[in-house]
Length: 214
Length: 315
Image 1 (cartoon, chains in turn orange, blue):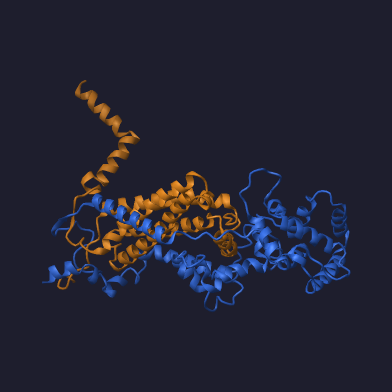
Image 2 (cartoon, each protein chain N blue to C red; image 1 turned 60 degrees about the horizontal axis):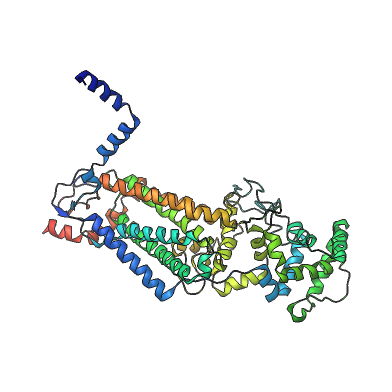
């Protein structure tokens, strides 16, 4: 093929959506930025553990939830194995929120949105709020007295602002769909977006030390 | 201005080796192990649900008293307002804003028909009961109110032999006594659970709105929740049955229900929902709110977090 042929192919390639996405992805997050093996020297505090712990707990919650869902929502009431995985799911959720809250407070005290990292905070904060919804629908999907009572009490708050007309906490089918598909997908997508933003912008540096302040 | 080095500039100081993948793998192992240990030690709570049958058997007096209000259309559910009923002036408001009415009645509930008359119609081989239903439907509203008032008064002196029937002294109850005896029997047999769940004669069902609303009208259901410290005034939204941690992350939402002006407000749910909406939005937008976004700099807790860094830089 001649040079002229190559340049015409190259121009055509540049117009391809696939090429555009690949080039944007690689320029925004080259491999050594996406999975770096070095970090600035200030990344040496226990507080950094809680971000990755939140992700680890999310994995435990999602995997135990998938196992629970395999035999249907009533399985764990009649099977000791099901009860075991329900325990893993419950404690995984408690650990997830514990780690996430410590992570959030840590990032607040670090002013982690500085240096163009506003979207990183926003995606993390929205992930926290959506995770609350995911947990809420989980409690509604337990099919026990706790679910009944939470539905009975929760409906008043949602009805009072018109949401209950569309998001009916007494409709098990609707709540279960939100819990096992829609909200886990939303939380996972937000967490992935959040992590990619962290990788792109890097870990926020410390506030200026004494003598560095202007 | 923050002052000092630009936080958006690439780090020009020293770097350390940091194995992100190994860190995630170790965290995954530790969290999974912790979850297993906690499960082995504490398992998870599973209090069986209340059914219409278990309610009617455990507390027939409460069941019948509730059912009469559902028949009369005077129960909490019957007068709830949107999304269940068209009851005027029943909605919660945020100042002049009535969001509860905006979607309209999208989940219509007619307690007289849905909770009492239709279930009674499904009971086969009961000509006396069917005549009682016909008499009730044919009677003017004033007459019905008289029957209901007389029956509710008589219920205070009612007997429930063996917790299996309701016997009231003779009186002018019209068809109400016959209907209540049959409804209690239907509930105790478990038939009412199925009837309330069945919509439009469909086989598969997943919507528990009717039985849950019926249950929530009785004192038995609430009494059980109170025993498990689940009421709103007991920080119930963040509690779980037994001694297990529940949705503890809802502590702030639950907190407002414990204090004035929300404690006694008829609009408490709407006001607290709006307040939490505003606080949540502020939480998400912290990086863009003057004063709040610079607060951590003044709190100086970052010096504890990055103490190694400052020790090195400032020494």
